Image (cartoon, rainbow, N blue to C red; front, side):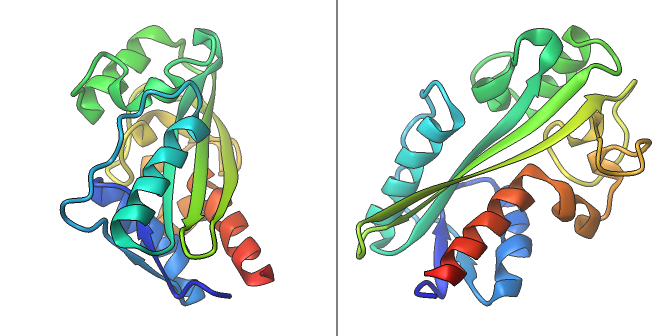
Length: 195
């Protein structure tokens, strides 16, 4: 395995903490984005289209292998919305609470949801780019519950758990085992291990 450390293209401390939990047990450090590195706007039409420019910007800024993800939630009842607009569902600058409130207003209780993660690896030295995707299916809770996790986690009841708790009620270990980011990170690690 070539990479012993990766730069994560995010300013989100929750995401940095989660990726460290997922990747560092494999012996690969996950470093914060260097100060001064500018990330491009997320204006793509897919999660992959948003993740790739961020990974490229981080790799160029740090001069070494970097990863970036774009992830979000898709509600079947809303035709896949909010999708790539998950972080700004009501509009630019929306808070996690505002995003969650809008989803709770618009999607029916118990309706199917899917978390999606597109994780991109970029290594400028080897001119290597690779995409990994992860998914987690679930349904919308009647009301937000739990204080763990972030974003839409308090309203997302994953199919792969006991069927009663939201992502925000699961332990880190339980969440990481079934989450969209967990699946994408495991695919990345398997690929790195096989190189």
